[in-house]
Image (cartoon, rainbow, N blue to C red):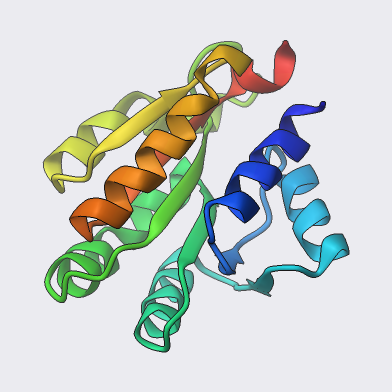
Length: 164
């Protein structure tokens, strides 16, 4: 099974029923599957922090939300994560394609790639690195952690995941 379909299945099986995202080259196939299957409410947004706010509203409305974004969008979302999600204890699952790491062909992604994990640590957001198929079970672990502790978590999807 292709990695994108595996991730979709984990998302669906975990009960996530509302997703926001902006376009991302690495996440495009997952987003296409979500859109095509039409089993999860999917709302494309123009900016990541907008998606964070909408996901918070979805949670307050009884949904289990996730935000799919590129790690460059994490920088755009810091204030919304800290002053909205963390302050009001709203759990959202972040699936973040980690650009700027290994084998990154676009040099402008490298600076953010170097500080992504540090930023997550600075805002006290627990995260998991998923770099190969053998790590896929950690996605369920992350989602379960979020559900049990009512906190937002980040799942960093490394470029190597798609090159296996």
